[in-house]
Image (cartoon, each protein chain N blue to C red):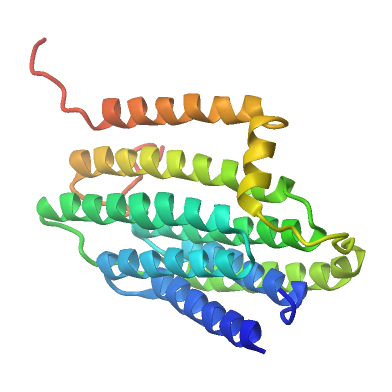
Length: 167
Length: 102
């Protein structure tokens, strides 16, 4: 009984904060709502007993990305424009596409759910399992990710750097 | 997860994906579009993670780890692009991005 109540509470918080992110009137409110959305995802991963993913989500998204987002919001407002977050003229199209996709996904999921093979044994101790799989089967993508992160880091610095007048 | 079915979690993930799609299509501000893609990625991650949990395999969770790393890269590069755009035009509105309109 307890996991059910916890799940629905977390799902409610997650959906509310996600909806607030895409509907609120100012960008700063959107950013703060996004922070709570990330936090609810951490709780959801913990409820699913995926501790590794919960901690990765906590460190990367709640810790780093949210701070980065709020910091860049601050940087952009320092120049003094565009605090509002208006709806575009495609809002109606957005609702229609979203409803269409949801109905499609739901119909697909209802048939798909019976084809999922049941767990032979529940995945426990997800830290050591994920770590083993990262360092054996997926060691090449794991190393490649560091290269991608380095490229993103250098790319971001080069993009934002102010150009020298005449170097 | 003894009491909550897989269908509920997958429907929650589908709702997150749908909210992300709505946000991408309906907002004028570049930053909110970026936030909406984050929510969409959350839904995709949740799908992978819950199916990985339900089938007792770990590949899905590993894949979520890679998606998270790529998402972090994407967010950083996108934010710096928005910042450069903001420095040029003093605005983060999508409506004004019509320099290439012939």
